Image (tube, rainbow, N blue to C red; front, side):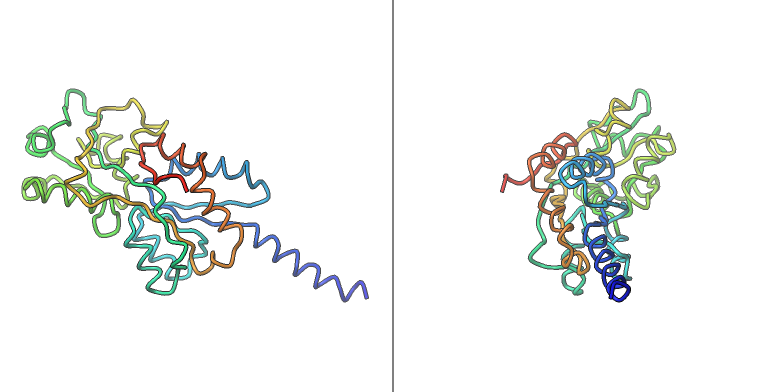
Length: 253
């Protein structure tokens, strides 16, 4: 009798372990803020095994559509999570805005003022200007919109170096491989990059709002621990961390 019950016990134990694990796919701009958020989440849910990966929002969507085992998707816009919902890969009622990002022009090049975007683009001393891939990274798309609205696209084009995601774009600037670049404010406020160089916030009127959407994937919709994580994103500790990294957050629920 005991032998017959043992396989059932092991199966139930395995299901319990699976239910207590959460895999998060997050836009690259969130990488440093997410470390802090995950640390706080673990304090409230020490029983949950939490893993996370970051990348360009569009690239993560492609991975999820191809079967990547993520429970929660945190995007730098709303279009990509809506695309997952439309494809039947995410649960529509769980889609929520949890933060709004800010785009900045940043440089670590000594003596380079960045408070005039046009002057930076046209400066002959600026040979390379970094931008995230507009086709997959919402911050790259926002930078392209800003250049278009300022009538600077043609002048900027020969200087552009394109990062796969916004963290790679920031690396181009940090390492001097680009003289300046359009990056997320959350990155230049991070412990790693704070007090490095100078930055100027791109006026929000120059690009569509960088509203960040969170959604449960089809896999995550059946995972109670994933729902706990999504709820935690709206908690006071998570909201405090997001504000510290330069994000605007919705009104408290």
